Amino acid sequence: LPVFTVTNIRENSPAFYAGLQENDQILSLNNNSNKTLELNDINLLLQSKENKKIRVKYLRDGVEHETSFELKKLF
Image (cartoon, rainbow, N blue to C red; front, side):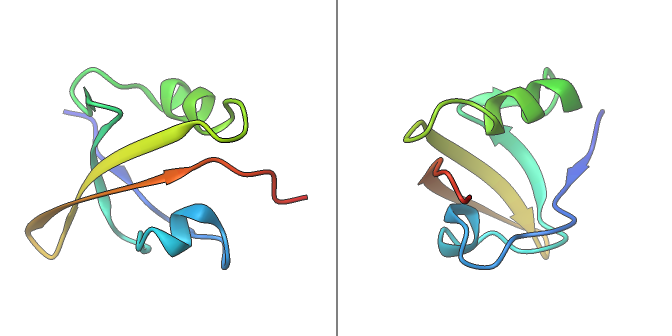
């Protein structure tokens, strides 16, 4: 299975405020399991239009968590 690990969270970004941290393992994005996702799918989703809601299920220290955030223009 593919493993997608968060390597960087930009401070003051929507993901930062949603509580995502480095080394979190992505289990699903918008109900799409990591079993069916490819890195390109994740990149396209995160580059979607502003205000698109992103739902994330992730694993941190062996415990599953869920959060969500809306995409924002940072620049």
